[in-house]
Image 1 (cartoon, rainbow, N blue to C red):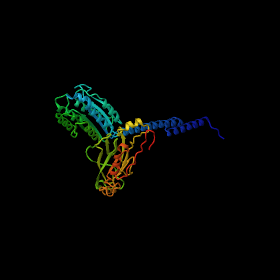
Image 2 (image 1 turned 30 degrees about the vertical axis):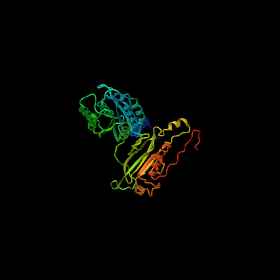
Image 3 (image 1 turned 120 degrees about the vertical axis):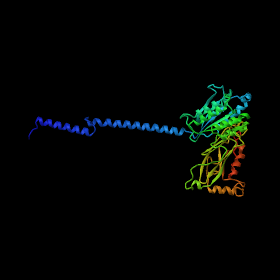
Image 4 (image 1 turned 60 degrees about the horizontal axis):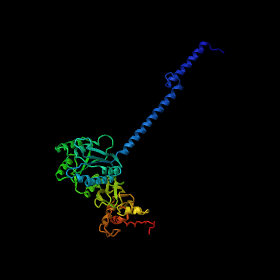
Length: 449
């Protein structure tokens, strides 16, 4: 066998080394050993992938937060806390108490998801504190606004222009979020003029320009409480300047509260068409007839009904405005829910609760006239041809299960509190349902007999 010389060994080593270099370049190592390059590349890719995943999660969380935080409706209360002359004594007492009570009632009867805020005006002309925000915009603040407005101490002159300009500014910026469906400013005032200027037209121009440059559709609503006759025209011109309906005027506290509650609704004083998805297989909207529908609030408790697009509210023992009307097309379906709150409508309820450890107020809301049947906790209404025809048959009472005129185009919510049981029975009768049972009374000794 012929042996390998030193030259041949050197050539073999160079060939092996060249082979390793080719393999390294082919693997993307640019001359580095194959085993050293691959792990570094893999780790780098893993780090980048992890960072992208974390960033995507953060973006998703931010989007979810914004989606959940944007309210359907946002309402700002602008309250006149000035003391007009010569009614200063009354203004510091009963008059402002009536305004505070009405604003608090409207705030607490708003929708649970509505964003509310509170601003006051009134003070020294030109002073920075002649208007100030008392409660910033946010959801679930009905009780806070009610408590805050009652703690206000009226004083100073009617700085109406400053209040209007500032409350428009409150809607500027990205946060607090504006309402997706509506943004409303509800002005409650006892003054029709700005006391700090003799040129009321300048106030109108500034209000008009501010509202126009706000960058969103602001809905103004004006309520005048005991506004002097000579200032009502000024308030009407101010409302027109910002594109608002004519002001609503009230001269008594009993008239003020219902007006405010109605102005909290999306479109007050008129029947509203229900724009909800139709049931599968329903004909086109243009071919489906419309029918009026009424929701009644048959309970002495304060009650708030929600369910797009229906919103009804009433205070405890209110005797008016206990219904809302709208229209539905055949094939439409809505679901309503009711929240009951406020003081006990039974005048003896508080006393009974103090003296009877077993006393329980019957404040659970029950629905009648719904798809689910009587005494349901939620109310689904499907506008079917059968519902319409049944209502026609029951109109004269001859075929109604209760033997009196009843309607399938009516739904009502009630409670079975002993003091208002008559309302519950009326609710059942009007919808053709069986009467609710007598509530069980537990006496102070624990017996029910």
